[in-house]
Length: 298
Image (tube, rainbow, N blue to C red):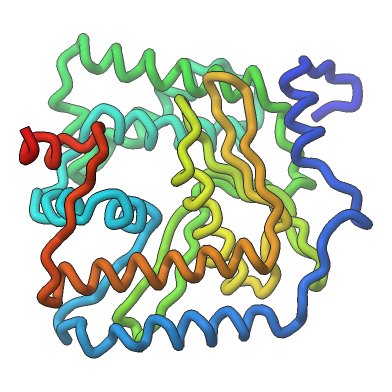
């Protein structure tokens, strides 16, 4: 960002929310990384014997949210073959276009970024490329428009990201437990900053649209724990940014936050192991948004 560049109020708000003086950043224990690893190893190793030798249990934020929300829906979705959908592709292409915007060398308009992202996703012989090629002209145009709205919202409401902020987009993070039988993994939409010694400096950001849900905060706690295990220093803050209203939901990372994420992972893995490999009958839910349980209760 140039020194004389003028920022709008939303862009200034991003800087105000995410910035912090070095003296205000938390210092974490040198032993925290090993303590978290040991605790999670202890809590997850007890499930190892229940997982067949031919299986590996992959756990993402999506799996945890599913099993916590409705075990019946978790099983039903797992048994269905994966299919691309407009919402899934819309999010993926939006993130790719935002990633390109951060590292593009010249000024570029949102729609050009969208077209470049779509071209990259449609070039190849994978299932995503094939799905995009099956779209009608109308559906392709609608997808292009929807993604353009998201990318435009990001470029309007966020300041240009300086290289000194160490921006990383869609960076994978992963941790293995129970001798590789349980793998926790995910990709953070955007991370900024880095730790200095044991002083936290990184901020993890997820981009969303629509209303706030408690699971949004749980998603970022999951990422914060994995990042803490990977680096040994937790992020200082996690934030969900809602593109359609230019607003943050922020949580400062503490050891209590990491502990809550750890307990939730243990709970989620236990439920998944029980319904997949044990004798437990999957439990339904009472949510009005659950199509499966609403059909059964009708």
